[in-house]
Image 1 (tube, rainbow, N blue to C red):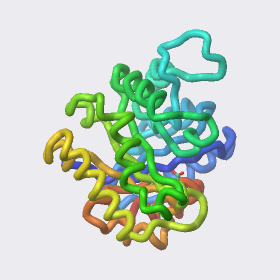
Image 2 (image 1 turned 90 degrees about the vertical axis):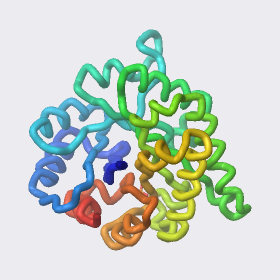
Image 3 (image 1 turned 45 degrees about the vertical axis):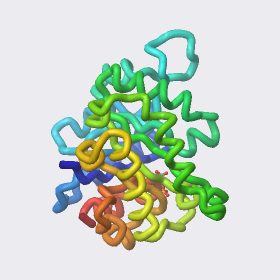
Length: 249
Ligand code: PGA
């Protein structure tokens, strides 16, 4: 059965001392939900976070990686490098990567392959922009993002893939998709997967919602049947808020 997951995407925030402080605050929180908890610090703090959380039930994940194993790619980090410090999960396809670093469905398909070849788990992000939603194209945009980056994979690969629906218009804007909008899209995503891979595969994939999830709206969003958790940006930078969201399950 699919798992509930709450993952904090710290983005380009927190140097070492802030990372230490936030992790120490996180360790003081009490978890009453059954959700899997993950945090994604920047590359420079992954090793520290991994070491600091070794004994805790919190997984440390990367925000990105390159598709090549190694070589002349200045400034990049490979799946093997992440694996070498114990990081086993990577976020791919975040809308900020797509918008600012020209990541495309095609380049993301290569990253997906590289991550899976290295036995990593993927949190694969996608979502429509405001113009797409205004034009009523949100489903076709989401469908093509999923198909282009993932549908070359066999069904087994989905054991290591978590999907994260993040409407671009809701990220960091304070504007959340309504619980019904999230549910409608998540049900559509699951149907799209079921059409290609069958109901069992679709039912076992966790689909997270991301975009201005806060302590005051998490419960209602997570209460929807096809929403299996959240990818949390801003609210993951304060341990109390993050755990209020974790405990919304
Ligand atoms: P937000 O970010 O919670 O700050 O909207 C979500 C994300 O980008 O994953």
